[in-house]
Image 1 (tube, rainbow, N blue to C red):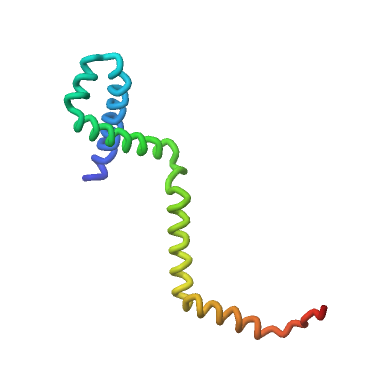
Image 2: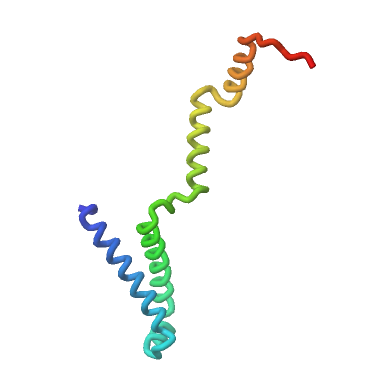
Length: 112
């Protein structure tokens, strides 16, 4: 049910946001719109915040590679690495494995 309604909500939200930007552009040229914006400041502030969110969603629809941002992607990658290390015995276990693997091979040491 929600998946059928979601595209219409998204389209309606983009339309409402677009209408705010049109209203904002027309405000300096219309005394009526400017007066309404002065009278209903809170309404227009909420509408403006919603319009900024709609512009952000529209930007993501046009540029899908912009999400997730690099800092968020790196955070999730670091979390995955930490989980893998913890499942393999932690950092101490990895260090012991590294040191023991060096003991298994007797390589000639270059004398300098």
